[in-house]
Length: 126
Image (cartoon, rainbow, N blue to C red):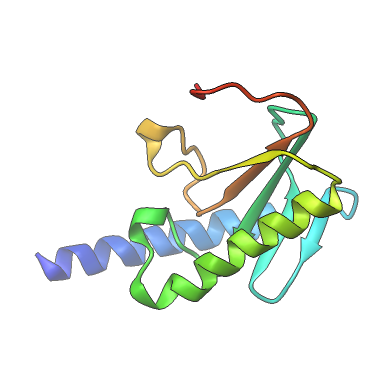
């Protein structure tokens, strides 16, 4: 069972690396909001609000539930970047969303945080 899970993670990692490489190539300078050694932030191509920015780690992680213990610092860093991006966008109120799996709405299987704002947001979402 452990070998099967390890193989699955490697396959997912390969797919994620390809998706991330493709995403990085398609992000124009106009869409890029923040670039750091561990994360990128750029405008979503399908925005759901006036401000909709994605924050992604450079490290390939398919989804939050597949993050490992050693990723804790990186996950915290992503939240800090989300806060900085919201501040840069002059958002006073905003939402940070992480979809984990297809059933939750994840369509790109590389972990990413949505920073959404610029309009009133209702609850519950979706």
